[in-house]
Length: 251
Length: 295
Image (tube, rainbow over all chains, first blue to last red):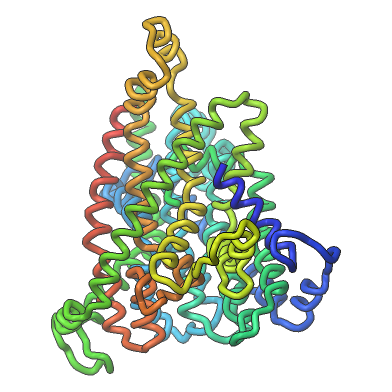
């Protein structure tokens, strides 16, 4: 099939210095170049910091909101749930220009912390939506039992809801991880010095210098940068797919 | 009785509920709604952001040929790419569903890889295939003695390449959604149809498609939004060239707003996406609600 053919082609292509085939043995020179001559490791470090922060922030915001929206009805909660679904449909490309100005005022331009601030706008709506779905499917008898035993809301959330909705939580975490790892437009627009760049932008911009293409280095970089999401996904694929197909998603 | 009392007690806690939602509400207000309103304001300023020009930027865009090219290109791109993504996803989902379940997981995993790699990076790999001097695809064409194709330097082929990469990235998403939908169709419907003497095509038209109608329309609408607002692929592959013929709204807004420094004009370009997105979002919301009611 077409996709498979293209995929394997590409994978071979990324490994080889000659088109399609490795003719002169395998070389690790490019990886060496990548680690010693370019700020690739800095990109990696920045990406990890950004991604971990984004995942933690996303999970805190969306689990709290999902718990409250699925169990504790309050004035306007229905409107809020619909609103969250709508914000999920807002693409990053609609708002990057005003955000560019706003982060400028905040003095966060050209720092990777800006990404920690803006990425949750992309990840939180979907994660909240997903968690509302999972929390709503928990039978009400369980929280009644917990309430009778004298649990308060915090205890109920931590000791009952989170363990029961673990598959959903894992899917949401992977989603937040993917969003912040793969983000391209925001870092491209907001960050311009090499020491603050993340992997996607760093690989694309700094490894292409003028007319000299370091194809080997470029491909080695792309391969390494793409590896973490692929590895994580390989282990947790079933959770992720179950989570995604249960709520509508974008792709 | 006791049940009721408990629920009254639960409902008396709107304040806790509100505080739990507060981070979310603040985020949406500060980083989505406020930027959006600010964006409308920005789009009505002149380039130096010193003077209010009303709809001047929009009128300016209407007179630009490049802008209309961007409009055409974005719509064409979204429709063609989504059509093929849906088609390939549908066929692939059927093929996987047809093979024994032991091999399904492996195949599904492999076919999903394009979707998991960050698009900016996988596009780099594609770029290497298309690149003029070392192009791996042209090398292959030469081997089978076909003329070389200027993948990225000629408008037609550049558009073709972008759509191709987009399909490659997006088709797996349709695959998983359709596979999940296919598995939820009750087996006895097909059995009943077989007994009545239905052939493969009839089963497809009268059982599979009607059962999947809803999920097909939702995924297609979603994908139109995402494809329409795409940025990564065009940016890495062609940067809108040759001569601005492959720009989409997002890349054009980036070029005008960030690279050329005319932020108000860039804001107006990206705001043009809004009406289309709003209409699509409205339809999606309606069909998601309908689906929820059916279930």
